[in-house]
Image 1 (cartoon, rainbow, N blue to C red):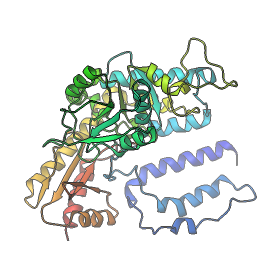
Image 2: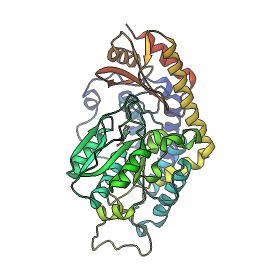
Image 3: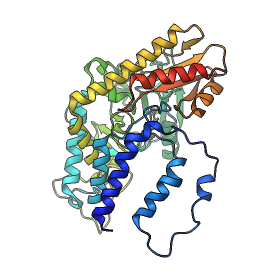
Length: 428
Ligand SMILES: Cc1ncc(COP(=O)(O)O)c(C=O)c1O
Protein backbone atom coordinates (compact mmCIF):
# COMPACT_ATOMS: atom_id res chain seq x y z
CA UNK A 1 0.00 0.00 0.00
CA UNK A 2 1.22 3.49 -0.76
CA UNK A 3 1.17 6.50 1.56
CA UNK A 4 -1.76 7.85 -0.50
CA UNK A 5 -3.77 4.66 0.08
CA UNK A 6 -3.04 4.71 3.80
CA UNK A 7 -3.87 8.40 3.97
CA UNK A 8 -7.20 7.70 2.30
CA UNK A 9 -7.84 4.89 4.79
CA UNK A 10 -6.93 7.17 7.73
CA UNK A 11 -9.16 9.99 6.50
CA UNK A 12 -12.02 7.55 5.93
CA UNK A 13 -11.46 6.24 9.42
CA UNK A 14 -11.53 9.77 10.89
CA UNK A 15 -14.70 10.75 8.99
CA UNK A 16 -16.48 7.53 10.00
CA UNK A 17 -15.44 7.97 13.63
CA UNK A 18 -16.65 11.57 13.79
CA UNK A 19 -19.95 10.67 12.09
CA UNK A 20 -20.60 7.84 14.54
CA UNK A 21 -19.00 8.99 17.80
CA UNK A 22 -22.40 10.05 19.16
CA UNK A 23 -23.53 6.41 19.11
CA UNK A 24 -20.60 5.14 21.21
CA UNK A 25 -20.64 4.96 25.02
CA UNK A 26 -19.05 8.25 26.14
CA UNK A 27 -16.99 6.57 28.88
CA UNK A 28 -15.70 3.00 28.40
CA UNK A 29 -16.54 0.26 30.85
CA UNK A 30 -12.98 -1.03 31.22
CA UNK A 31 -10.88 -1.99 34.24
CA UNK A 32 -7.34 -0.67 34.85
CA UNK A 33 -4.79 -2.68 32.83
CA UNK A 34 -7.41 -4.24 30.55
CA UNK A 35 -6.29 -2.44 27.38
CA UNK A 36 -2.61 -2.92 28.11
CA UNK A 37 -3.11 -6.66 28.58
CA UNK A 38 -4.47 -6.91 25.03
CA UNK A 39 -1.34 -5.39 23.48
CA UNK A 40 2.09 -6.98 22.97
CA UNK A 41 4.71 -6.10 25.57
CA UNK A 42 7.31 -5.07 22.98
CA UNK A 43 7.39 -3.33 19.61
CA UNK A 44 7.26 -5.59 16.51
CA UNK A 45 10.54 -6.77 14.98
CA UNK A 46 9.24 -6.41 11.44
CA UNK A 47 7.32 -3.54 9.94
CA UNK A 48 3.54 -3.96 10.02
CA UNK A 49 1.11 -2.49 7.52
CA UNK A 50 -0.79 0.63 8.57
CA UNK A 51 -4.01 -1.39 8.17
CA UNK A 52 -2.95 -3.44 11.23
CA UNK A 53 -2.79 -0.24 13.27
CA UNK A 54 -6.30 0.75 12.17
CA UNK A 55 -7.58 -2.73 13.02
CA UNK A 56 -6.21 -2.55 16.58
CA UNK A 57 -7.50 0.99 16.89
CA UNK A 58 -11.00 -0.32 16.18
CA UNK A 59 -10.78 -3.51 18.18
CA UNK A 60 -8.69 -2.54 21.21
CA UNK A 61 -8.02 1.17 21.54
CA UNK A 62 -11.34 2.86 20.70
CA UNK A 63 -13.34 0.59 23.05
CA UNK A 64 -11.02 1.83 25.83
CA UNK A 65 -11.34 5.55 25.08
CA UNK A 66 -13.38 8.26 26.73
CA UNK A 67 -14.79 10.16 23.77
CA UNK A 68 -14.02 13.82 24.27
CA UNK A 69 -15.47 14.48 20.82
CA UNK A 70 -18.84 12.97 21.86
CA UNK A 71 -21.72 15.46 21.79
CA UNK A 72 -22.78 14.31 25.28
CA UNK A 73 -19.35 14.70 26.89
CA UNK A 74 -20.36 17.22 29.57
CA UNK A 75 -17.57 16.69 32.12
CA UNK A 76 -14.74 19.08 33.12
CA UNK A 77 -14.71 21.68 30.35
CA UNK A 78 -16.08 19.84 27.37
CA UNK A 79 -14.19 20.64 24.20
CA UNK A 80 -14.31 19.77 20.58
CA UNK A 81 -11.71 19.18 17.94
CA UNK A 82 -13.68 20.58 15.03
CA UNK A 83 -13.38 19.32 11.47
CA UNK A 84 -11.20 22.27 10.34
CA UNK A 85 -8.99 21.57 13.36
CA UNK A 86 -8.67 17.88 12.45
CA UNK A 87 -7.65 18.78 8.90
CA UNK A 88 -5.10 21.30 10.14
CA UNK A 89 -3.56 18.72 12.52
CA UNK A 90 -2.93 16.49 9.51
CA UNK A 91 -1.20 19.34 7.71
CA UNK A 92 0.85 20.20 10.81
CA UNK A 93 2.10 16.61 10.99
CA UNK A 94 2.87 16.59 7.26
CA UNK A 95 4.89 19.81 7.54
CA UNK A 96 6.47 18.92 10.88
CA UNK A 97 8.24 22.27 11.18
CA UNK A 98 9.77 23.56 14.39
CA UNK A 99 8.93 27.19 15.24
CA UNK A 100 11.64 27.57 17.86
CA UNK A 101 13.12 30.59 16.08
CA UNK A 102 12.05 32.76 13.17
CA UNK A 103 14.88 31.43 11.03
CA UNK A 104 13.97 27.79 11.70
CA UNK A 105 10.64 28.34 9.95
CA UNK A 106 9.80 32.00 9.24
CA UNK A 107 6.18 31.47 8.20
CA UNK A 108 5.44 29.42 11.33
CA UNK A 109 6.61 32.25 13.59
CA UNK A 110 4.78 34.90 11.59
CA UNK A 111 1.57 32.86 11.36
CA UNK A 112 1.65 32.50 15.15
CA UNK A 113 1.92 36.28 15.45
CA UNK A 114 -0.95 36.74 12.98
CA UNK A 115 -3.17 34.07 14.59
CA UNK A 116 -2.76 35.57 18.06
CA UNK A 117 -3.41 39.10 16.76
CA UNK A 118 -6.58 37.82 15.03
CA UNK A 119 -7.74 35.96 18.12
CA UNK A 120 -7.00 38.96 20.35
CA UNK A 121 -9.11 41.07 18.00
CA UNK A 122 -11.95 38.52 18.04
CA UNK A 123 -11.95 38.64 21.85
CA UNK A 124 -11.71 42.44 22.02
CA UNK A 125 -8.23 42.47 23.59
CA UNK A 126 -6.15 45.63 23.14
CA UNK A 127 -4.16 45.79 19.89
CA UNK A 128 -0.39 45.42 19.98
CA UNK A 129 -0.03 42.75 22.67
CA UNK A 130 2.72 40.15 22.32
CA UNK A 131 1.04 36.77 21.81
CA UNK A 132 2.35 33.23 21.76
CA UNK A 133 0.94 29.72 21.76
CA UNK A 134 1.71 27.21 24.49
CA UNK A 135 0.55 23.61 24.92
CA UNK A 136 -1.69 24.28 27.91
CA UNK A 137 -2.91 26.92 30.31
CA UNK A 138 -0.65 25.35 32.94
CA UNK A 139 2.40 26.23 30.81
CA UNK A 140 1.03 29.67 29.89
CA UNK A 141 0.51 30.52 33.55
CA UNK A 142 3.95 29.16 34.43
CA UNK A 143 5.48 31.41 31.75
CA UNK A 144 3.52 34.46 32.93
CA UNK A 145 4.52 33.93 36.55
CA UNK A 146 8.16 33.37 35.54
CA UNK A 147 7.99 36.76 33.80
CA UNK A 148 6.49 38.31 36.94
CA UNK A 149 9.27 36.78 39.03
CA UNK A 150 11.92 38.19 36.69
CA UNK A 151 10.63 41.69 37.55
CA UNK A 152 9.93 41.10 41.23
CA UNK A 153 11.64 38.02 42.62
CA UNK A 154 10.75 36.31 45.85
CA UNK A 155 7.22 37.56 46.53
CA UNK A 156 4.07 35.49 46.81
CA UNK A 157 1.59 34.44 44.14
CA UNK A 158 -1.95 35.26 45.22
CA UNK A 159 -5.15 33.84 43.72
CA UNK A 160 -8.73 33.00 44.62
CA UNK A 161 -9.40 29.93 46.73
CA UNK A 162 -11.25 28.71 43.61
CA UNK A 163 -8.32 29.29 41.21
CA UNK A 164 -7.20 26.31 39.13
CA UNK A 165 -4.48 24.22 40.80
CA UNK A 166 -2.16 24.98 37.87
CA UNK A 167 -1.56 28.38 39.52
CA UNK A 168 -0.36 26.82 42.76
CA UNK A 169 1.72 24.32 40.77
CA UNK A 170 3.41 27.14 38.81
CA UNK A 171 4.19 29.02 42.04
CA UNK A 172 5.68 25.83 43.49
CA UNK A 173 7.84 25.21 40.41
CA UNK A 174 9.08 28.80 40.55
CA UNK A 175 9.83 28.61 44.27
CA UNK A 176 7.32 31.36 45.10
CA UNK A 177 5.04 31.19 48.13
CA UNK A 178 1.34 30.71 47.26
CA UNK A 179 -1.58 32.35 49.08
CA UNK A 180 -5.29 32.04 48.45
CA UNK A 181 -7.94 34.69 48.99
CA UNK A 182 -11.53 33.89 50.04
CA UNK A 183 -14.44 34.38 47.64
CA UNK A 184 -17.64 36.41 48.03
CA UNK A 185 -21.26 35.19 47.74
CA UNK A 186 -20.90 34.91 43.96
CA UNK A 187 -17.68 32.89 44.32
CA UNK A 188 -15.48 35.81 43.11
CA UNK A 189 -12.13 36.58 44.70
CA UNK A 190 -12.38 39.47 47.17
CA UNK A 191 -10.34 42.39 45.79
CA UNK A 192 -9.31 43.88 49.17
CA UNK A 193 -5.91 42.14 49.12
CA UNK A 194 -2.82 42.85 51.09
CA UNK A 195 -0.24 43.24 48.29
CA UNK A 196 2.75 43.63 50.54
CA UNK A 197 5.47 41.15 49.46
CA UNK A 198 3.45 39.96 46.47
CA UNK A 199 5.00 39.17 43.07
CA UNK A 200 1.82 38.37 41.16
CA UNK A 201 -1.94 38.15 41.48
CA UNK A 202 -3.83 35.67 39.31
CA UNK A 203 -7.45 36.58 38.57
CA UNK A 204 -9.72 33.85 37.20
CA UNK A 205 -12.21 34.70 34.48
CA UNK A 206 -14.31 31.55 34.67
CA UNK A 207 -13.19 29.45 37.62
CA UNK A 208 -12.99 25.74 36.88
CA UNK A 209 -15.71 24.58 39.24
CA UNK A 210 -18.28 27.38 38.96
CA UNK A 211 -17.11 29.71 36.15
CA UNK A 212 -17.04 32.69 38.53
CA UNK A 213 -15.40 35.87 37.24
CA UNK A 214 -13.01 37.64 39.61
CA UNK A 215 -13.22 41.47 39.72
CA UNK A 216 -10.41 42.18 37.25
CA UNK A 217 -10.90 46.01 37.06
CA UNK A 218 -10.53 46.39 40.85
CA UNK A 219 -7.64 43.92 41.00
CA UNK A 220 -5.91 45.69 38.11
CA UNK A 221 -6.19 49.05 39.85
CA UNK A 222 -4.71 47.61 43.06
CA UNK A 223 -1.92 45.75 41.27
CA UNK A 224 -0.93 48.70 39.09
CA UNK A 225 -0.66 50.93 42.17
CA UNK A 226 1.51 48.35 43.96
CA UNK A 227 3.73 47.36 40.99
CA UNK A 228 2.40 43.78 41.16
CA UNK A 229 1.98 41.61 38.01
CA UNK A 230 -1.65 40.74 37.23
CA UNK A 231 -2.18 37.54 35.25
CA UNK A 232 -5.71 36.68 34.07
CA UNK A 233 -6.59 33.00 33.75
CA UNK A 234 -9.44 33.02 31.23
CA UNK A 235 -8.55 29.52 29.99
CA UNK A 236 -12.17 28.51 29.45
CA UNK A 237 -14.41 31.58 29.66
CA UNK A 238 -12.25 33.96 27.63
CA UNK A 239 -13.64 32.32 24.48
CA UNK A 240 -17.09 33.70 25.36
CA UNK A 241 -15.81 37.19 24.50
CA UNK A 242 -16.06 36.48 20.76
CA UNK A 243 -19.69 37.57 21.35
CA UNK A 244 -20.01 41.26 22.23
CA UNK A 245 -22.71 40.47 24.81
CA UNK A 246 -20.12 38.45 26.80
CA UNK A 247 -17.31 41.02 26.62
CA UNK A 248 -18.09 42.12 30.18
CA UNK A 249 -16.13 39.07 31.37
CA UNK A 250 -12.87 40.53 30.05
CA UNK A 251 -13.44 44.04 31.45
CA UNK A 252 -10.20 45.34 32.92
CA UNK A 253 -7.86 42.94 31.10
CA UNK A 254 -6.44 45.88 29.20
CA UNK A 255 -4.71 46.76 32.50
CA UNK A 256 -3.52 43.21 33.19
CA UNK A 257 0.06 42.18 32.46
CA UNK A 258 -0.84 38.85 30.89
CA UNK A 259 -3.86 36.75 29.96
CA UNK A 260 -4.36 33.14 28.92
CA UNK A 261 -7.26 31.75 26.85
CA UNK A 262 -7.32 28.12 25.69
CA UNK A 263 -8.70 27.68 22.17
CA UNK A 264 -8.59 23.94 22.93
CA UNK A 265 -11.23 24.42 25.62
CA UNK A 266 -14.05 26.36 23.98
CA UNK A 267 -12.83 27.55 20.59
CA UNK A 268 -13.09 24.35 18.56
CA UNK A 269 -9.33 23.86 18.21
CA UNK A 270 -8.09 20.33 18.94
CA UNK A 271 -5.78 19.63 21.87
CA UNK A 272 -3.41 21.29 22.41
CA UNK A 273 -3.55 25.05 21.99
CA UNK A 274 -3.27 27.71 24.68
CA UNK A 275 -2.96 31.40 23.80
CA UNK A 276 -0.90 33.67 26.05
CA UNK A 277 -0.71 37.44 25.59
CA UNK A 278 1.31 40.00 27.48
CA UNK A 279 1.95 43.71 27.25
CA UNK A 280 5.37 43.10 28.81
CA UNK A 281 7.22 40.73 26.48
CA UNK A 282 10.55 42.00 27.84
CA UNK A 283 9.75 40.31 31.14
CA UNK A 284 9.08 37.00 29.35
CA UNK A 285 12.38 37.46 27.57
CA UNK A 286 14.16 38.19 30.82
CA UNK A 287 12.79 34.91 32.18
CA UNK A 288 13.44 32.67 29.17
CA UNK A 289 16.02 34.08 26.81
CA UNK A 290 18.82 31.54 26.31
CA UNK A 291 21.45 30.96 23.65
CA UNK A 292 23.32 28.01 22.26
CA UNK A 293 26.32 28.37 19.96
CA UNK A 294 24.58 26.13 17.45
CA UNK A 295 21.53 28.37 17.17
CA UNK A 296 21.95 31.95 16.03
CA UNK A 297 19.40 34.65 16.80
CA UNK A 298 17.29 35.89 13.91
CA UNK A 299 18.13 39.46 12.91
CA UNK A 300 15.14 41.80 13.15
CA UNK A 301 12.66 39.00 13.93
CA UNK A 302 11.13 37.31 16.91
CA UNK A 303 12.52 34.00 18.20
CA UNK A 304 9.79 32.37 20.27
CA UNK A 305 12.34 30.21 22.08
CA UNK A 306 13.33 33.38 24.00
CA UNK A 307 9.82 33.78 25.43
CA UNK A 308 8.90 30.30 26.50
CA UNK A 309 9.85 27.23 28.54
CA UNK A 310 10.55 24.96 25.59
CA UNK A 311 12.92 25.28 22.68
CA UNK A 312 11.08 23.10 20.17
CA UNK A 313 7.57 24.30 19.31
CA UNK A 314 4.84 22.63 17.25
CA UNK A 315 3.19 24.57 14.43
CA UNK A 316 -0.02 25.02 16.49
CA UNK A 317 -0.71 28.37 14.87
CA UNK A 318 -1.81 26.56 11.72
CA UNK A 319 -4.78 24.89 13.41
CA UNK A 320 -5.88 28.02 15.25
CA UNK A 321 -5.64 30.04 12.04
CA UNK A 322 -7.55 27.33 10.13
CA UNK A 323 -10.32 27.22 12.74
CA UNK A 324 -10.71 31.02 12.69
CA UNK A 325 -10.84 31.01 8.89
CA UNK A 326 -13.18 28.07 8.43
CA UNK A 327 -15.70 29.30 11.05
CA UNK A 328 -15.21 33.04 10.74
CA UNK A 329 -16.21 35.43 13.51
CA UNK A 330 -19.89 34.75 12.79
CA UNK A 331 -19.53 30.98 12.92
CA UNK A 332 -17.67 31.11 16.24
CA UNK A 333 -20.22 33.53 17.67
CA UNK A 334 -23.11 31.29 16.58
CA UNK A 335 -21.61 28.25 18.34
CA UNK A 336 -20.77 30.10 21.56
CA UNK A 337 -24.26 31.67 21.63
CA UNK A 338 -25.89 28.29 21.12
CA UNK A 339 -23.87 26.77 23.97
CA UNK A 340 -24.77 29.62 26.30
CA UNK A 341 -28.44 29.22 25.27
CA UNK A 342 -28.36 25.44 25.90
CA UNK A 343 -26.77 25.93 29.33
CA UNK A 344 -29.42 28.50 30.30
CA UNK A 345 -32.15 26.15 29.06
CA UNK A 346 -30.73 23.26 31.09
CA UNK A 347 -30.50 25.53 34.16
CA UNK A 348 -34.16 26.52 33.66
CA UNK A 349 -35.19 22.82 33.69
CA UNK A 350 -33.23 22.27 36.90
CA UNK A 351 -34.80 25.32 38.51
CA UNK A 352 -38.30 24.25 37.51
CA UNK A 353 -37.93 20.91 39.32
CA UNK A 354 -38.33 21.34 43.10
CA UNK A 355 -36.15 18.28 43.79
CA UNK A 356 -33.12 19.96 42.18
CA UNK A 357 -31.33 23.28 42.46
CA UNK A 358 -28.81 25.33 40.50
CA UNK A 359 -25.82 25.77 42.82
CA UNK A 360 -24.03 28.77 41.32
CA UNK A 361 -24.83 31.55 38.84
CA UNK A 362 -24.73 30.18 35.26
CA UNK A 363 -22.88 32.75 33.16
CA UNK A 364 -21.42 30.79 30.28
CA UNK A 365 -21.98 27.23 29.02
CA UNK A 366 -21.50 25.40 32.33
CA UNK A 367 -24.22 24.62 34.87
CA UNK A 368 -23.42 23.56 38.45
CA UNK A 369 -26.46 21.90 40.05
CA UNK A 370 -27.48 19.32 42.61
CA UNK A 371 -30.29 17.10 43.71
CA UNK A 372 -31.45 18.57 47.03
CA UNK A 373 -31.65 15.29 48.93
CA UNK A 374 -29.93 12.64 46.78
CA UNK A 375 -26.31 11.49 46.72
CA UNK A 376 -25.00 13.65 43.87
CA UNK A 377 -21.77 11.65 43.47
CA UNK A 378 -23.84 8.50 42.99
CA UNK A 379 -26.25 10.25 40.59
CA UNK A 380 -23.35 11.47 38.40
CA UNK A 381 -21.75 8.02 38.49
CA UNK A 382 -24.96 6.16 37.62
CA UNK A 383 -25.76 8.62 34.83
CA UNK A 384 -22.26 8.24 33.39
CA UNK A 385 -22.41 4.44 33.68
CA UNK A 386 -25.35 4.41 31.26
CA UNK A 387 -22.80 5.35 28.56
CA UNK A 388 -25.21 8.04 27.36
CA UNK A 389 -23.27 10.98 28.77
CA UNK A 390 -20.35 11.99 30.94
CA UNK A 391 -20.76 14.40 33.84
CA UNK A 392 -18.33 15.01 36.71
CA UNK A 393 -18.78 16.53 40.16
CA UNK A 394 -17.08 19.19 42.23
CA UNK A 395 -17.53 20.49 45.78
CA UNK A 396 -19.21 23.65 47.04
CA UNK A 397 -18.90 24.27 50.79
CA UNK A 398 -18.23 20.57 51.30
CA UNK A 399 -21.32 19.45 49.32
CA UNK A 400 -21.05 17.53 46.03
CA UNK A 401 -22.36 19.37 43.01
CA UNK A 402 -22.75 18.04 39.46
CA UNK A 403 -21.39 20.09 36.54
CA UNK A 404 -22.76 20.00 33.01
CA UNK A 405 -20.32 21.76 30.68
CA UNK A 406 -21.26 22.30 27.03
CA UNK A 407 -18.46 22.89 24.55
CA UNK A 408 -18.86 20.52 21.63
CA UNK A 409 -19.79 21.94 18.23
CA UNK A 410 -22.08 18.94 17.60
CA UNK A 411 -24.08 19.16 20.85
CA UNK A 412 -27.79 19.80 20.21
CA UNK A 413 -30.78 20.65 22.35
CA UNK A 414 -31.77 16.97 22.05
CA UNK A 415 -28.46 15.93 23.60
CA UNK A 416 -28.96 18.29 26.53
CA UNK A 417 -32.58 17.13 26.99
CA UNK A 418 -31.41 13.49 26.91
CA UNK A 419 -28.79 14.30 29.58
CA UNK A 420 -31.46 15.82 31.83
CA UNK A 421 -33.68 12.74 31.39
CA UNK A 422 -30.81 10.36 32.21
CA UNK A 423 -29.79 12.41 35.25
CA UNK A 424 -33.34 12.42 36.64
CA UNK A 425 -33.63 8.67 36.09
CA UNK A 426 -30.32 8.20 37.93
CA UNK A 427 -31.51 9.59 41.25
CA UNK A 428 -32.07 6.03 42.49
C1 LIG B 1 -9.59 28.01 34.68
C2 LIG B 1 -8.57 26.99 34.28
N1 LIG B 1 -7.28 27.33 34.22
C3 LIG B 1 -6.33 26.45 33.86
C4 LIG B 1 -6.65 25.16 33.52
C5 LIG B 1 -5.56 24.20 33.10
O1 LIG B 1 -5.65 24.01 31.75
P1 LIG B 1 -4.63 23.09 30.93
O2 LIG B 1 -5.21 21.71 30.99
O3 LIG B 1 -4.64 23.67 29.56
O4 LIG B 1 -3.30 23.17 31.60
C6 LIG B 1 -7.98 24.75 33.56
C7 LIG B 1 -8.35 23.37 33.21
O5 LIG B 1 -9.49 23.00 33.17
C8 LIG B 1 -8.96 25.69 33.96
O6 LIG B 1 -10.25 25.34 34.03
